[in-house]
Image 1 (cartoon, rainbow, N blue to C red):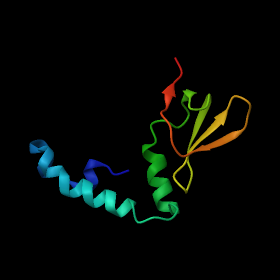
Image 2: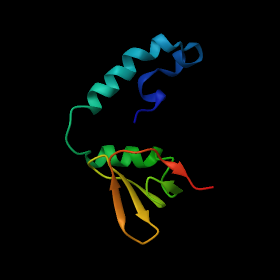
Image 3: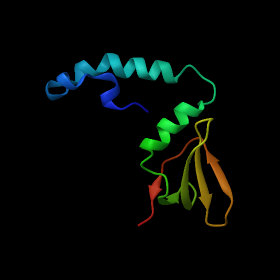
Length: 95
């Protein structure tokens, strides 16, 4: 995950156009695609932005999202108490 403030200077944010974001976004994606587990700094940065942590979901597993693992899996504590590391799927929030 990358924050807009990390790739676009404050002076340029008021006049942003989608084309201006292409280079920084591609660069961030290529950096993330280098492979291997997330290091401690990357995990900490993710946790600071993790909108889903602590939220209850209905699917792909019913439970509470605990966060993301170093391997990039979504970690969900199921209603039965079992931790699930999910690598794909669509998250459906509980009502």
